[in-house]
Amino acid sequence: MRVAQRSMGLSATLGIKVATMTTQKERARAESRDQLREKAEKLIREGAAVASDIGGGHLGVEALELLYRRASNPEFAADALKLLHELQTHQVELDLLVEQILASEREATAELVYYRALFRNAPTACVVVDRGGQLMDSNLAAATLLGIPLDHAEGQTLAQYLAPLSRKALASMLHRVETMSSGATCLVRLADRPEYPLSINARVGPTDDSVMLAISHSGDADANINPF
Image (cartoon, rainbow, N blue to C red):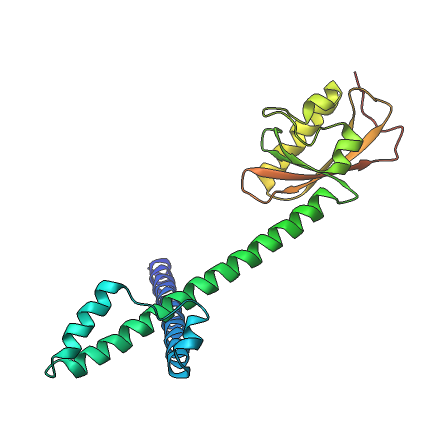
């Protein structure tokens, strides 16, 4: 009975929290719309020239013809002017919204370029693989250390650059990252340079199906890895 009561109480609490979050989101959207409307009306009050600076306030020919016909009739003139103002306001709102979207897109693109360059030029060899060890991305330092070409062919794996037993160590590490959703490390040796031990530090990657690897020389020439 007590378990059932606790469960019902928890469900009620969660329901209240979800409802509160929904209300907060709706309030935020409403505030955003109100701010957009306020800014649009301010632009219109400041004059058509100001509104036209952002490409706003221009109505289609058919809309203008309809408004002209309505305004020519004294009975509908007041309504036509109100409609004109409302249409102009909506038009400016849309143009302001487009301007905001384009600004956000430019900002996101610049940020993407920045972090892409940061990854590509990092002094540490960085490789992104999927859960099976297939190469997804790599940087310049990885190309130098491992010989992985930046334009590596689809289907290439990190394991093919490693000595046989090191491939098993890599697979075991990737499995630990997947099952524990945490970091893991292992020591490996290159297939073409078995005397050169490497340390791999793995973390969950930028997407659910990827793993980020930082690879460096371990400095342990006696690492207990049989390259054959």
